[in-house]
Image (cartoon, rainbow, N blue to C red; front, side):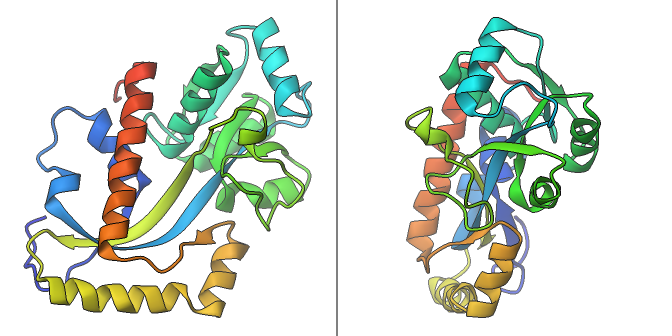
Length: 243
């Protein structure tokens, strides 16, 4: 935030920044005000997944089972306020189900317990979960984006069952707010060239991410503002409090 506004200090931004702007009342910075957006790089879908022993093969099956067993299903997350957590809270709110949230310190320990059957469901980002899904160790029920993923082509989208549902993490770049527009434009062109490169797009796809279309600083700024507004509504409705 206090680095020289000369384009040589760049911040890797992500969905956690917009979630935190609503989750924490007292921060010594304002992400939406103090960072000038440069470009969005990719979206990172999440996938709703269960242990193979769980008695549900589809989202409707899961919802029916959850409603018949309120408060008896443990939902893991990578931590309070993370994309995995708010995606799960959005599902709980829209599906009208009571799941017990079990926060972990990161995806790895959460996945370890999901794989071991200590928890039953998780909304996780695709890069860490796809290998386990392909190995048959986890059962995917739905992806959280509005379109199916090339990396999981047989997995339906959540909106097929809960119309209007969408959740994804994302990654982009920003600079200190007073950085001159011409510097921001120069960086923007370079980032857009990178995400248009076939090799980079293919590598992102391998990881389960989706490269964003080339975007302007203004378009990325709108994406950030819309994301912050969305998660602020979810956090307020769910009564989420920081750890």
